[in-house]
Length: 247
Image 1 (cartoon, one colour):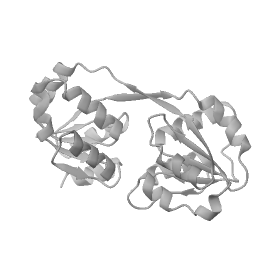
Image 2: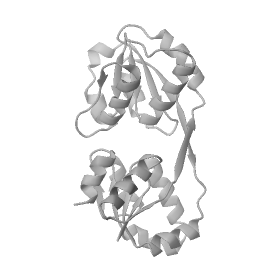
Image 3: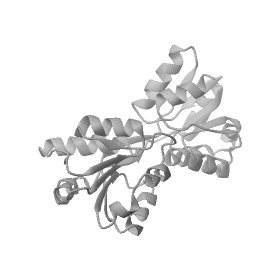
């Protein structure tokens, strides 16, 4: 029995190594890669406009990596007079590492809904917020903030590119490796994986695999696409995934 890992690099490869170290067979399939976003040039100007207790939100660690690289090149520091929010603890820790500031993030069930629930609606009204994300990101946070009277600037800090996959070759390799479990940590990766395997009837067996996903939202999508055996992992860190996969 082998577990298919689809997390982007470097986390995907690291998880495979962690599983292999425990004697668990894992197969890695890279579906997406990242590159700098087309709107990074806006970041310095938007940050300079922020006033006391305005907000910066980060919805992924990739957005922080690329934003931080850009700010370093421009010799711009992360401002100290604003409030910082992150989607979860891992993203929060990375943002704290680069910015040096306190980061607010959900302690349990790391998703946009939990992050929104932490906001003080009265305090954020008439404030400005920067959301660091990619163009494929959810719009729930942006829409909610706008409805609360916040001026919102979404900045595409990184782009997602789909890797070229030989559909028939990969289907054969997955079958030869006796894949029984799938780890898919984002809705975009799930949709990409579905588009690949659904083209050939020979890949339909993959819908019988147990699929591990990072949120209830992705679980609902997985069931809509055809998976019945779906397990939700509360958080997408490698440690959390490993704990679930070894049980």
